[in-house]
Image (spheres, rainbow, N blue to C red):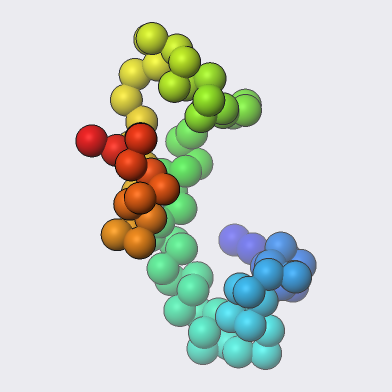
Length: 80
């Protein structure tokens, strides 16, 4: 559980700050959505990850990248 003050500090200086500043309804909505999306990230192994190193490693395995249609051209070398 993260306090509203901690969230405000985390998003300070970003476009997301409006979702956490004096807007309890929006904050609640964001918390609900994140509670469904973040748990998978908690299982990630600690340490640094380099996409460049992964691409160069013949034993790198699979990498699943979520993307939107407007990102397709930029990600074309990485998606099949």
